[in-house]
Length: 291
Length: 315
Image 1 (cartoon, rainbow over the protein chains, first blue to last red):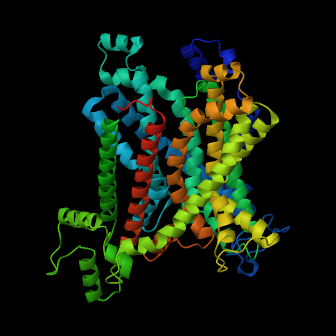
Image 2 (image 1 turned 180 degrees about the vertical axis):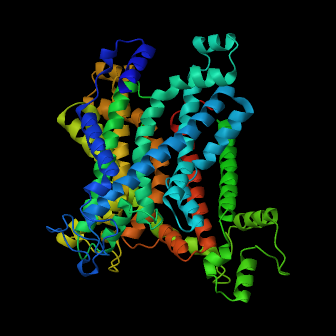
């Protein structure tokens, strides 16, 4: 995948691909760590030392010990087990939010940039309105009205808040290549607009979208954790953010609950950002996307 | 320029219109009866009727109000600046509750921004002056960590270190006001912004240092500090202005989290309490306030940008 993109970009810029540089060691570290996270998420039930429903009310908020490597939470559940299951929520949220929001954003942005005129005006005003809600604010509002937030509700709320960024990015890209000779040629051949747009234009706008989507995974994981920290996360699954919420409540009593879930979030997000930075060095040597 | 001003101003008005509309319909899209959600299903019938009337769901005669009329009434509350009267405290408006809570939130946001500028700008400049040196590499990794560490983790970590272990700074909710109670919240909120500023300043200044006018300044024998600070940095800071403006919105939503961690009063705490008590008016009022502020800050940022960079295209 990366190799193919690498070739594509080199071809587009008209340079030998060796000049584009290689993926940095940090990016490799990031990919290795993310592979571990994915492995843990898939095999969580076999890796976790305890059952997810295990609770021992006589052993609440215990610091790390031989029985509970990372200690226990406020219900006497095993923190390591909860952190392991938390990778599932993080992966599901990260991947689904980016897939949904990037798909909506690419379609709307491409249509907006390619056809221009009234359609463009309407879609762009819509993105302006979506972007007037900073960060997780719109997601907070959506979760508030759904009352009992489920994982699905959180994913949808975050997707609704995130598509506008992709739409703007793709629109800009489409505008810059819409009038290139090969697009004209495709039109001159009499291909339908839909085919020209999605087979000839959009694929050539994807390099910066892939970079933004990579950072988007990190953003979605952070946003879900933030919602859970505020008590607005999925109530049906253990989330790192909810564990940190407990940690912040009990930090005067014990510190392990605040430390370990945070390390999990930080390492995951840091790894994704390493990969994103590495991809940008390769795919976007002219710095079109800024973090 | 004036054409640009007018256009930009009208674009902001459209956005405000859209925000109000979106918030209204989102609140009305709630599944189930909001009155059940607020009062519980066992509530007395007269309480329910009173609340329905207060929320403009029914009129004085008990007839349901059409959605369009509710929407118009909603606009009335926005335009007269009250954002509606609270149902549980007659005579108190949402705007009054917001006004009480704005100063601590702005104090926090400005302190965080000050911290971010104080840390982000100098480190970004240092990194740009010595690219690929150890300073640059260290700041690159540190800034990536600053972006990756969530503020709801950084806050508790700082508390554990500085107020629990070292006991240099007060605990949250200890009733201590003043500067010492603002230090940790400001660092917690400002770290991510300082990291982004650092990266932006670095890349922007590095680009400028390769420009012809900087080479000319060097060639005519100006001292290098003067070349960097007066010629390159001034131009390099122009795109940084945009980041500061855009990040202000992140500061406002970040403040919701930081106020929770440090048990500070503010708009974020008002919003969270409103969510907990299922107070629809407080929730929609706080969301509207944060969005409006963000839209206005972005408008001002754009105008400042156009003012300092006359090359900007006005279309």
